[in-house]
Amino acid sequence: MDIRLDNTEVKWDHDNYYGRTGKRLKFYVRRPVSGSFFSHAIKDARGGGPPKHQLLKEDVMKSLVEEFLGKKRFAVVGSFRNETKYAYRILRDLASKGYEVYPVNPNTDKVDGMVCYKSILDIPFEVDVADIVTPPHVTIEILRECLQKGIGMVWLQPGAESEEAIRFCREKNIKCLHSICVMTESIGKGQT
Image 1 (tube, rainbow, N blue to C red):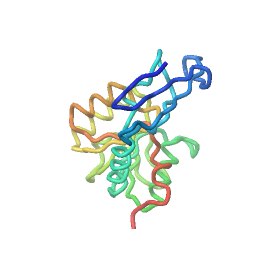
Image 2: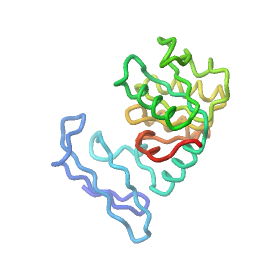
Image 3: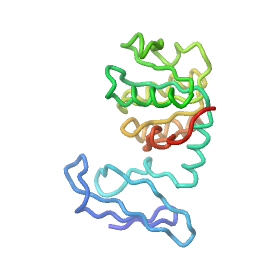
């Protein structure tokens, strides 16, 4: 099956990917004549095509990543039960690169000696970016808190995003990165 989005041909090969639905799928991107193309591989397919919220143009994505990583203060929302949890790993990775980080989890008091806030709204400092590592049904509530706090940039880690969350960000003019990992994108970058 071939689909055309924004002058880009997207081809699904239903024999080469294991999706949540049990089907094997693979995502291919072909560079169109205009030079613009989607570069993000889709990891799940729900009935015949990529979820539109998971497609970002490469040039737009790269620009947003640079803008987000140029900020100083990150709230990391997720589970910090142990060092294998992605929120914990992201928190430590950002801190090691010189970012100010604020862990957020309603069930945790401290993470690596840092105060862990029960809610985004409890952070007594200005926050530039909220990095969200929660299930999609929790993500939308976190986004509402970000809106209340005036946080204009959110990074939804893979698995935290949903079409509802992306639509919410778009409607409320919150800049949103999704479907890519901050640890991967911040390699070789950090605050000085």
